[in-house]
Length: 346
Image 1: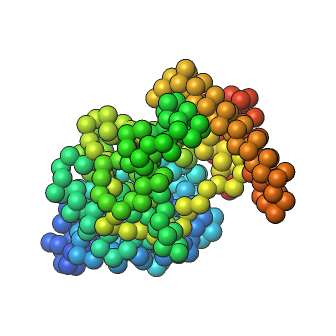
Image 2: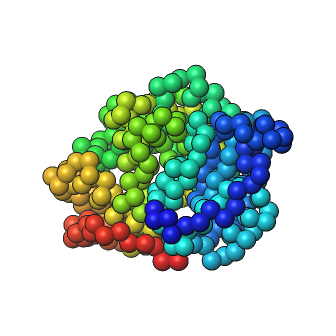
Image 3: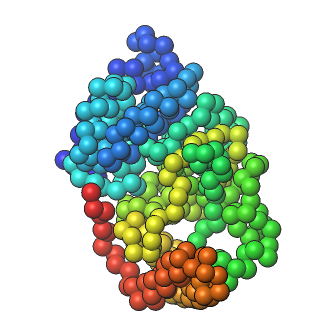
């Protein structure tokens, strides 16, 4: 981050929450540094900030917000309504990972809680994550149980992407193994017990300062998607564990999948997946993963087309799904990854 690209425009006098307001208490080192990245989500971000303020009760903490050049009045609203929040205002959208890096460089807490603007922390969740990490010094990252708006389970733990796992998934072989086993995946696991996992979704995750210090921040070549996967892979390689606990719960509104194979958000997802595979598995691994996805998407397109032909009541859905997988197979067979990072349209 170039210094001229951002300015710290607000630093509340009592930035350490959970402490008394006298001058001595204001110097207390925060246990938790909360970091939120905002991009044109003013009302949702304000709700997120109010929720996390309540969840931090009794915990010495600081809250950092990085704004990626919002144009919806976010800065003015947050500055006036949440004076204790420390704000970094970017003059351009630098991306999710880069924005978090800006705040992590200045945060002083023992633990960093990365939080999406559409994630609302339930009472006691922060304390549960802190207690877990303080009791287990080998844990570098901890993630809570994520819930949809209707409080149904939202999957938040996944295996690291790899060519071998891509083949198993696309050939439906993971279904032959237990949901939590080494050869299975976490999709059929009910997320109902604490356990070590490969990586947790970055909508809400707590990171130990020493783990951050050992590997650095996000790889800023990932503009959006896969940056937390890559980061947690590096953290695990450095010897830290990634842990999930269902005892901390967070409502996350953004858990739905992206709309279509040709949508801008989905294109960013596949660009980031390409970058991850090339970085961690090389060109041969990337080619193998692409082939697995072409085979899997072609099989699914055929099955959905057959469903549409045989079941008129499901024809519209089936043909939509078949078209999606056809486009995905074509994209994975023909699209050459670009190392140039594209920023999303406002």
